[in-house]
Image 1 (tube, rainbow, N blue to C red):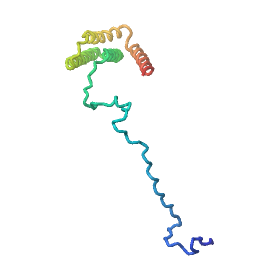
Image 2 (cartoon, rainbow, N blue to C red):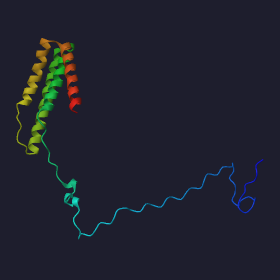
Image 3 (cartoon, rainbow, N blue to C red):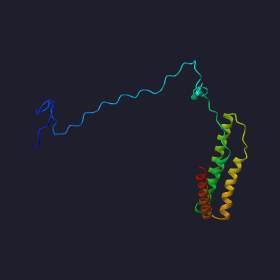
Length: 177
């Protein structure tokens, strides 16, 4: 048996009830006092101006009109044309020539729609007119490139060349981010 606890004032039991099970979690400690602010009050306007005062905004950012900028060249048109040549040239031996003709027509319609969207953006934002020759050159050049490549090298070679070009493009993209 164990000896009774030695409490101050004698061996009697304390007045508070004992917890069932014999374990009482320790009483929570009071939270520490909040830290005192270390920021000193701003001096009156009579003192020297703060260095960052000249960078303070006078107009909120959402009220400023951000000018629309023109895209940087015809790289989207070139990328779309190359993708078209890769896809249609790669499938040329495996589909009917009528399907290939429909693919040419769909490509021309998409190029025409992109051209109309581009000219509408120029008109809406009062930009000077960009050269118009890349659009028909891409439409006719893409279709001509597909047919010439199919006649000269065939679809399997176009597929392999497309994979090599895509791999090189991804390498350059990852290299320069």
